[in-house]
Length: 352
Image (cartoon, rainbow, N blue to C red):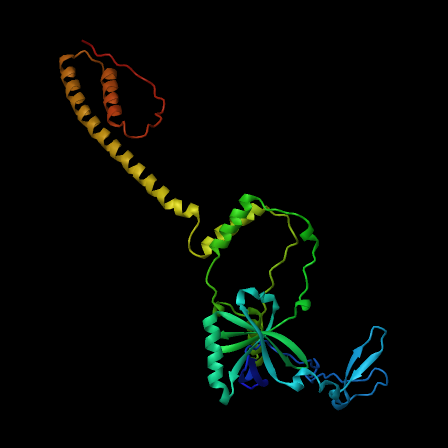
């Protein structure tokens, strides 16, 4: 990495020579403006709007426009007396608890590495700050402006987080803040349940720039001469009035399914099936016992009917058939009843 600033950290009578390096970099696909017909670069020229002449970079100065439209021209010499030219110092103002700094104030991150002669005091400041659990609020000048920053320890390296000044942070001024809208208790509990179901530890590697990755694939496809197929974007519906409670419940169920927990109904379904299976098995066992008992009774009935038939020779076939049907009906008590088709009854008399 290349150092973008060098100076000293000053706290009390101790100074730590350091160099500043960019701690972050934006990963984005950069484009040039080109002529669509032949790919030639389209460049912008710096032209004076008064005489129409192109202005060389060396002749360009900074101008501050006054409310009446007049312009105050500042050259490089006008900036020589600013704090950056006087002293390249990171001055510690105070050591404060980190939770007292609102993250909205943070702007950009830098690493501070010790100079060759500053390793020992650097380690002293780093370890002392780590033990205290506090961060240092500092001032320093860079790029033609004085900046406020927070100095903290990250991965055994002093990290400088530039901060916005308090008057650079906009105050929220929205109409809805004037209306007192309180969510219902049931809705609030359901929302809390949804938060619990989506709670997890933050792992930065789990998140990717899907847009940049897709754009890089398109560029690679163009280079390889392959056909680029862009999937259609999902249709976006207009604003709809929804049932907030229903949406919260659906969100909780979806979150549970995504995390493999399953819904309450899914958890209860195996238990219900198990209970139904036990009930069916018990019914079959009862029916089997009734069938065995009925079979033994039927056997006894058949023997009695046979004896009666031999003693009473005058019994008609209709009566014998009726007795047989009664015995069969007693045997099939455990079977579901079936509707018998209507038949024409015929009686036959035997001669004595």
